[in-house]
Image (cartoon, rainbow, N blue to C red; front, side, top):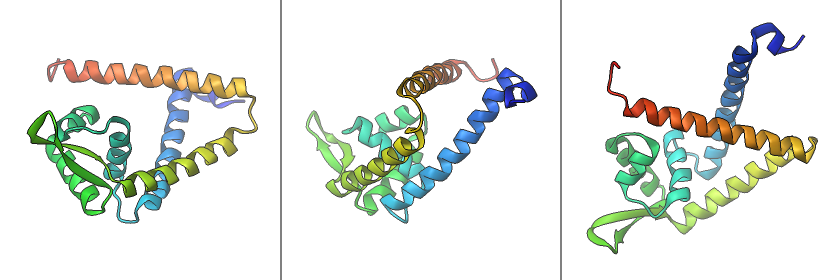
Length: 160
């Protein structure tokens, strides 16, 4: 008997996603410590996000992550103190700053990403490539669905 038989289809999906999320969190904490032992989970996520969208203003990062500017400011301060992120004057507006990874931040993040990729390759290496491709496609569909649902929820007035 499978989990789907025991729980029902939707409950089984929720259960399996919960297991994946808990394991992903544990892996992320280990990887985060490899970037820097004093790094906090929120700052690690910001570091990865900044890699994807840099250079960016703090307000752009707050919007990208769906958090307040104060939260972003606190996490950026930590990343700057650790030498992983730097501020640069925005050439389009001398009053504003753009944030980007330092060469040290980029190097540390690259090292961790290579280790993470090797871990996934080892984990999924026993599966046929078509199965891995199907998993990636389905996860992308789910992520898009979740992202759109999050946008819809944020656009709704409170209590509606």
